[in-house]
Image 1: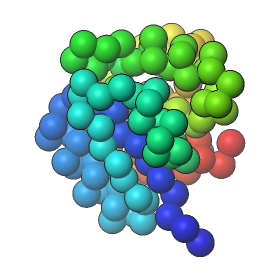
Image 2 (image 1 turned 120 degrees about the vertical axis):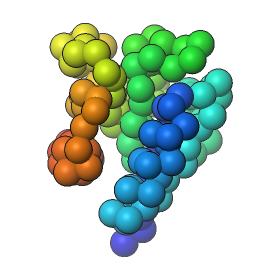
Image 3 (image 1 turned 30 degrees about the vertical axis):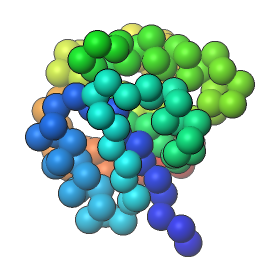
Image 4 (image 1 turned 135 degrees about the vertical axis):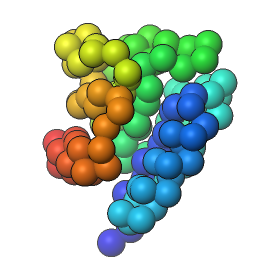
Length: 120
């Protein structure tokens, strides 16, 4: 069975490094974007099984990106797990996120959320 592909959109380089290591150890294929990359374009080219995206990216708003993903026909069904240091779970879910993780979170919480979202 091929590895499930996770696309990371996160602006904290330490977090990216940690997430890449953890996810690879759990058997996921991981592609990390630079903070200024075009997330929508990356979703279209990478075709991930799941997008793990921070709400607050350097010059981009994760909720705006999520809205665009949900509005576009070719990306609307993408599974998206949002994360933030602020408790914006309801807002993320209202914008169409499949799940939310409040930072800081434990690896077990991440893996549980990933399995839940990927099983939808």
